[in-house]
Image: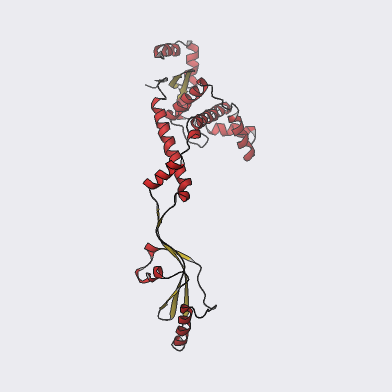
Length: 285
């Protein structure tokens, strides 16, 4: 059991000159007292210092970072102590930066270079812990996927793939053009001069009322319509009736969804108890 009184006594028993210097440079905001020690999150950590993306890190997340750091240390989990150095080296290489540039980058985050490395180390430790505690063990079974697909069916709408052509006529040649096109529709001749459009996919529910004949055509069949100055031809290239998406086609997205849901559930349960062996002392009250 953590003795909060001892922590408070320790904090206020610092030599006066040390307290004075500390207050001059920064001010404690929160103390995280966990299984391996006491860590102060300062006023500037909360209100001034930035992440690499230029945003402030919420206090509650900073507390989580520290709690997990201490849990990793307490459990002696094999983390890579050089992860922050490797990350910074990669930033330096990819962006062709000098060490001075990296220090300037830290300054833009209102941090020293050492503080920036410490932050990156905390973030790596946090991600490492969550992966090895939760993500690495999330493997939905084929039965889980099958059950989800049955409980949440996905319907693919029916569709038609068509090609369209327009053939102009005049009053003088209309009869001849019509006779020729009727022969094309009947399949008795092939007219290579007809310029068909690229295939167009249309969902059955989107087909206009006056074009419902499209859905009734057989594959390769043509329907002829007459307009004021041209004939319209509609050829059915392919057709697919409404169907349920097969489990095999959905598997990747369903596995991703189930992984995320399982992870969020496990993380929520963990966070309910992550503070059981930790004392958080607010120094800003």
